[in-house]
Amino acid sequence: MPPRPATKAVTCPQCGVSQQESPGVISTFCRACGQHFELDDRKPARAAVAAPAWREKLAPLAVRLAPFKERALRHAEPWLLRYEPQIARLREYYERWRPPEFKRVRCHECGRLHEVPRLASSTSCPNCNAHIDLYDALVEKRVSRVVRTRGNLVIKKFGYLNNQLTICGNADIGGGAAGKIFCDGETRIRTSGRLNCEIGSRRVRVEKGADVIVAHPIRVHDMVVRGKVTARIYCNGTLRILKRGFLKGEVHARSIMVDKGGLLQAELNIGRFDELDPEILGTLQERTCYMALEEAVLPQKQATLAI
Image (tube, rainbow, N blue to C red; front, side, top):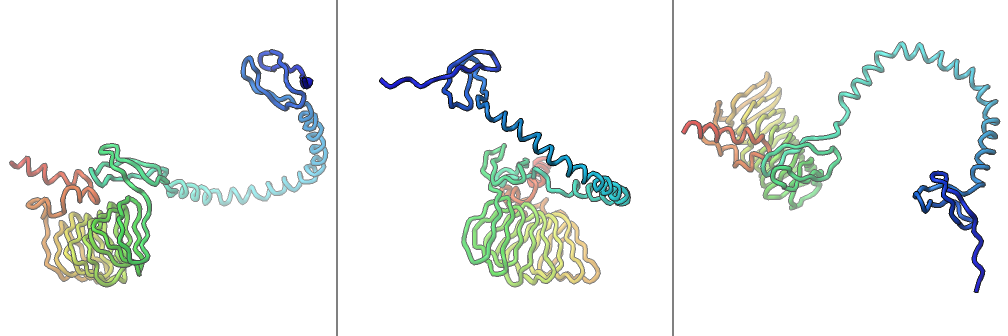
C-alpha cells in the first residue's frame, strides 16, 4: 500500500478553524465558514521585497521631475483661465448633443410609443406584444425582400426595392422602389425618374437636384420641396415649396407656403379633407405606421360625436 502524502495544518483567518491541506497548495476554502484565503508564503515575501526596491529607484526620478511639473502647471494655469469660457461652452455643447441612451419606437400594429435602449436590435410592443425589429436596411442592387423595421432604410443610386409593404423608421430613397413605403420619421427623396410606390411618412423632403415622378399618392404630415416632383399629395399639415422647388400634380393640404423662386403647378385643394372621408389618409393600421394613433382616431371620434 503506497504511503499517504504528507499534509500541513492551516488556520482560517476568518473563523480560526484548523484543517489539513497538501503542502503545495496555494489557496483553499475553509470547510467551516467557506472563506477563501491564500496559503502561498512566498508571494507576500516577494511583494514586500519588490515594492521598496521600485520606490527607491523611482524616488530620484520623481525629485528630478518635480521642477518640470511645477513649471508645467504654472504655464498651464493662465492658458486654462484664458480659455475657460470656451472649454465650458464645449462641455455644454457635448452634453446637449451627445446621443441619448434611449430612443422612442412606435409599434406598427397598434401605434403605441415606448422607449428602448439606443443600441437595441429588436423589441416587443408592451401593448400588443408585436415583434419590432430595429436594424438598418441597405439596398444597393435590385432586390425583392421584406423590410419591416423601425431602423433606417437606405436605397442607393443603383438600388431598387420591390416589396408589397415596407415599414421603416427613416428612409433615404436614392434609387427606385415599388409597393408601399410607410415611414414613421423622415423620408428623403434624392432620385430622378419614376417611383412606382405609395409613400406614407410623417415628413417628406424632396432634396435639391431630384426630378421624380411618383405614380401613387403621397400621404404625409409635413412636406418640404427643394427639387422637382410630380405626384398626388395628401398633406395633413403644412406643404412648403422652397426656392427653385417645383411641384406638379394634385395637392390636398391644410396649408401651403411657396417661397420666392418656387413654382406650383397643380390642382389645389386647401382645408380639412379628411373630415368627409377619414380613410383618405389610408386605413387605421397604415396610419399607425407613420402618424400618431391619436391623429388617426380623431376623425372617427368626431364622426361618432356628430351622430
